[in-house]
Image (cartoon, rainbow over all chains, first blue to last red; front, side, top):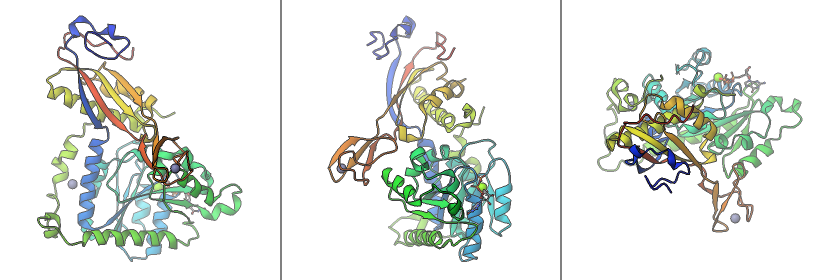
Amino acid sequence: MCQTCGCALPDHLQHASSEHDVHTVAVLEGLKAHNDAAAGHNRAHFDRAGLLVVNLMSSPGAGKTRLLEATIEALGGRHRLAVIEGDLETENDARRIRAKGVPAVQITTGSACHLDATMVHRALHALPLEDLDILFIENVGNLVCPASFDLGQHASVTLLSTPEGDDKPLKYPVMFRQSDLVLITKADLLPVLDDFEVAAVEAHMRRLASPAPVLALSSRTGPLDAWLAWLETGLAERRRHVFRPAPDGERLLTRPGAPYHAPDHAQDHPLDSSRSPAP
Amino acid sequence: MREPRDVHELSLCRSLIRQAARVAAEHGAPRIRRLCVRIGPLSGVEVALMREAFPLASRDTPAEGARLEIATAPVRVHCPRCAQETEARVNDLTCPRCGDWQTRLTGGDELLLVSVDLAASAIESPTPSNP
Ligand SMILES: Nc1nc2c(ncn2[C@@H]2O[C@H](COP(=O)(O)OP(=O)(O)OP(=O)(O)O)[C@@H](O)[C@H]2O)c(=O)[nH]1
Ligand SMILES: [Mg+2]
Ligand SMILES: [Zn+2]
Ligand SMILES: [Zn+2]
């Protein structure tokens, strides 16, 4: 151990004598603390509005936008939907959603590899949360980076398209073990793929100690029944939470019409001001 | 190969430095000499990319030139059936003893700033960690 400062460094000699005043401070703080706080704030917004928020993640092109298009059609106006689009390079996905008559907010942050809670916070204030039932967040197509950032969603859904192969949960355990549902997409291609086993995906999920259900569907041919049923269950669950008896002094529930924040709070919000601009 | 500016390790590295700089400011220390971090393989952070991102993220901050020490945490699971905790693998979290899959992760997803070494004086220019 270094006699000068008490550090455990083998190369302690680099401590110059002028640095005898170096001292260690224990911190023990999570590096995601900032994002987690922002995510908690988003979740408070969502819970107050009583809507279900679903984070869709997958590798690029696995069918997130196509699933949303098919879902919008299949629900046929049964629920009030909106989409936050994390397609960072183009407006294409947002345009596709709007073409179906559903509001879509595009997050534009250049070439980021994931969405974070602060980006979602800015986007959510562009939406009439109180008038929505389900908000989908289409994350950036990437099976690695989005897994590390809670956005405030109630459920994470990972799409795995059949051409990608059934071994992906084992190759991307961080993403898949955090998923509440795995959707095997492009199931219409199963007949031409000789080595994709839906059962194998399920077995891999259990190997990750995850109880998440695994559903296979095709956005091209349907049916989407199992997926829609999962959404309905999630929505019913949300509503049960919102309409629970309000404990005394719970301001959010006793003043149902009051905005959670001033409408302009996104500008001077602590979540935003503590976010340092990219160099 | 992912470029440093395109990976989430860069944003997490910025969080790390922001947190360390706040501790330094609280102690009135102008410079950070060392940051000790603990990272589990299931945190979603690649240690090598974190190291790569550090020089860029720390530029023009009190942590510029500081040493980044990363300790990796083992993946551990608790099996309720065996009432035991064991080491597991990143993509096999089943109980190594009884094979049951209904385990609970007890270690391996950490992403922690453990400690910082602060220098009270800014007399000496710091040794660059990356030449
Ligand atoms: N055969 C078949 N093709 C599909 C299905 N779902 C999506 N596709 C096709 O796959 C391609 C990519 O679909 P998108 O919905 O744009 O994928 P995405 O995940 O939103 O892609 P990014 O946003 O770029 O990551 C398109 O050509 C879709 O038509 C499906 O169920 N079956
Ligand atoms: Mg898309
Ligand atoms: Zn807010
Ligand atoms: Zn066991």
